[in-house]
Image (cartoon, rainbow, N blue to C red):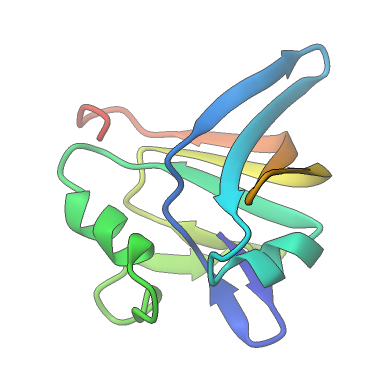
Length: 125
């Protein structure tokens, strides 16, 4: 998730991984055709939320083009930097964008975790 001039954006990604332990870096892969990509391309901050097993519908919502991802059915709030926070996600990485690397029709969005929030409970999706 990130915030642009027209409000919050988010997308379901199929690949998320650690990239480096020193310094700590993560990578998410985003298709250049994703509706959220224009905002993520310019965003200095973004968040990665790992969902729990009961959040398949939320994952599907964020994967659907043209869906109202931040509507009344999504439990979220902007954080102090306006980065959308999906409140029911058991794990959230709030990141500073470090680099964007184009590989074919996808972009590796590299982020430095500034804050990690973890809630125990449900198994991951």
